[in-house]
Length: 255
Image (cartoon, rainbow, N blue to C red; front, side, top):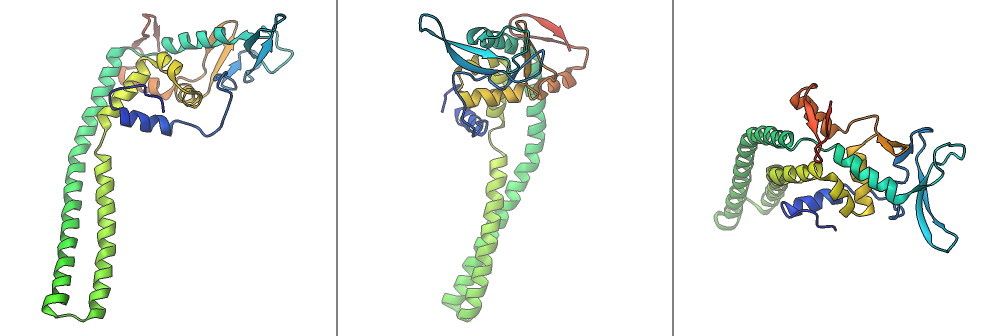
C-alpha cells in the first residue's frame, strides 16, 4: 500500500484501501474510460502505438472514428493537462481550514454524547460480569441453585454480555480518528494533483471518481466537467455562492 501521508498514516491507509475498486485495468492509462471526448461524449480509449523506427508511443483517442478531433492524443499531454485541471479545482486553503474547524466543532459536540454512551455501556458490561460472578458463587459455594438452573442462567448472561461488549466496542470505534481523517481529507483537497501522481492505478481511478463523479470531458486541449465534486460544493455552501475560490497556483474563479 502506498504511503502518502505521515499524519494519521493508519487511517490514511484504511481510507485508500476502502477507495480501491476491484476491477483491473492497464496501469499505463489511468484516464481511459474516465475522460470523455468533448464532441461525442464517449469515453476515450487508449493503447500503445509503434512508430516507424519501432519506438512505442502511448496515446488516448476517441472511440468514434468520425470524430474530427485529433485521432491520437499523447498520453503525456492528456495526463499533464489533467494534473493542471486538478490544481485549478483546489479550494482556497483558508476555506479548507474553516471547513476543518466547522466539522471538528460539530464532532466534538457529538463526542460528548458519545462519551456518555460509552460510559453507560461500560457500566452495563460491568454489571453483567458482576451478575455472572454472583451466579457462579451461588452455585459453587452457597449451593443455593441446582446445576440445570445455573447452566440456563449462565448461558443467558453470556449472551447478554456478548451483545453488550459488541455495543461498547462499536461505540469506542465511533470515537476514534476524526482529526486524522480530516487531516487526510485536507491533504487530498489541497494537493490532489501530487497525490494522483503517486497513487496506484486503482487509487487514481477512485480519486478521479470522488473528485469528478460525472467524469470529465476533453476537447482541443481543454478539460471541463458537468458537475462539481461534492467536496467543493460543501465549501460553496459554507462560504456562500458568491464567494471566490482560489486554486493552489493562484488562479481564482467565481463559483
